[in-house]
Length: 179
Figure 1 (cartoon, rainbow, N blue to C red):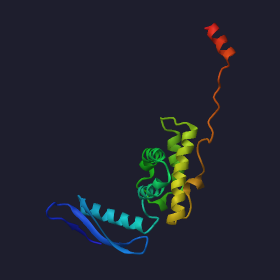
Figure 2 (cartoon, rainbow, N blue to C red):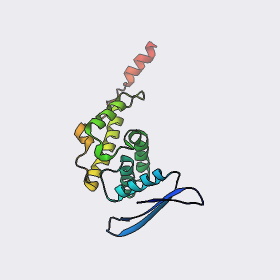
Figure 3 (cartoon, helix red, strand yellow):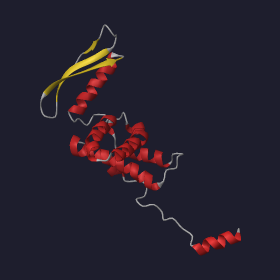
Figure 4 (cartoon, helix red, strand yellow):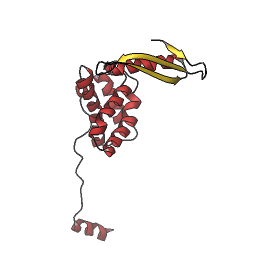
């Protein structure tokens, strides 16, 4: 569909019709783009999102996922998920179409996280991987993604943390006396 230039502001906008999830035809208008290309890209992404097309970007899928889970979980849980998604998932997967993300892509991301200088704990790595898998499960269930690439490539990290070793009172006293 064509994009238009607002002569007063010098900004571009797009105006188009789409069919919503209830089958109703609606008009959408979005203004304020610096270039015609940005307006066209936004329009295309909006149409892919509204038509449940697997060529939408991972970032768009995350927006749909967050809208879906927000009323079902506590605000602090949502905040924790958003932090994890924004810092660990979107920098790597953000602009990739979800149908192009493969088990190999996920495996490369896992390797990057495991070998990162932050030296994440095994349980945290497992939590991050589980969040990625949950997002792909959402896409499989509601948006026609063929399979979950996070499940296909396997997990990373550990479910349970290592046990902490505590001293008994006698061991502590022995240590203090020796020092």
